Length: 197
Image (cartoon, rainbow, N blue to C red; front, side, top):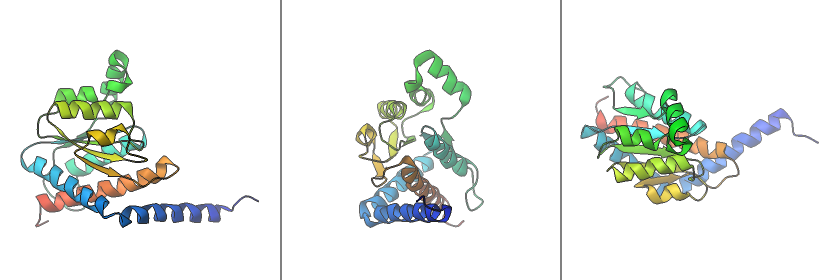
């Protein structure tokens, strides 16, 4: 017998809750988020910028991170220097000329400066184009914050700070942790940058 829609919804929400609880039970996760917040806020204070990248849903998360900082999250405050690598003309140009593995790294090479921070998002930790971006970032003096899943993949070895979602069967559970972490990043950066807001 197939489960009812009600059963399906409850099972999904319970599974999501269990993954979040598992994430919360590891104090290193909270410490890593705090380190990343301070690292990014310090970069902004020093006149540097935050860049972000990811594929598919992770690109949407990268865009969300950047627009909430350059735009507005919860309170009115000065715009912050954040951008996502998501310009379709850049992505299609570089993919056509150099291959899809270079779509993010080429942008980092063009606009990344020492002291900037790259937020690199990959649910597997093994997205080739995100890994290339992290490599170029490190070569050019940027710091790398990585949001990963599974075993962290190759991306984990390139990160100054890695936040890894708990093991789960599907990427959507990882993405649900990532978006919660991203919201913590944004709120934490705002509070450090604008403590009176």
